[in-house]
Length: 256
Image (cartoon, rainbow, N blue to C red):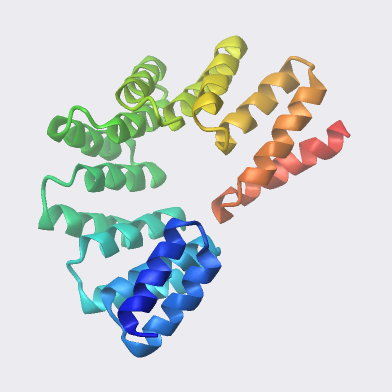
């Protein structure tokens, strides 16, 4: 099969959620011709398969071929952010902003790296710069909610999550984060409502099930708590969530 046909086959498989089929087609394409595009698509398929190390190496190879490819830079930065490789992620996002100062998403991602590094002042400043560039960015307001929540600015965090949800009603994450914030503040009823609304938008959101599990546990509704904790474990597969998965598994054992 020709290179272009293999590339299209891999791309189509990714769109259809067939990461295994995509891997096979793209690996064949790579043997014929190693381009930035095939390396990016191959990395996407590997990420779907949980092959983070291989994906990062392919993204690095792609950036050697095209160091100013914004799609590659985003993919590399996002992966490094997930793996908590803060310096590498920050560098990737900074290059994007240097290439295109209007790339609001890169600024927000920079803020998330700074939040991960517990530099809350820098994170808030970077995030507000992004909002100044794009006042309609739900992504930026959701990030600002995370930053304010981490800094103990509860009312500002609530307002930011609500604004994010208003700007993008199809994104369940701000509602789930709002539910988590309410739970941490001891507002169980508000937490329950926010998480249930989040799951109406996206029934596959792990955080909402996790928070509901703890809400029901505090309400002595052990059966509902168990169901939500089990659903959380089914859905949350990120390596970064290993500690919380272990904690929830221990709670489940205690409930059985």
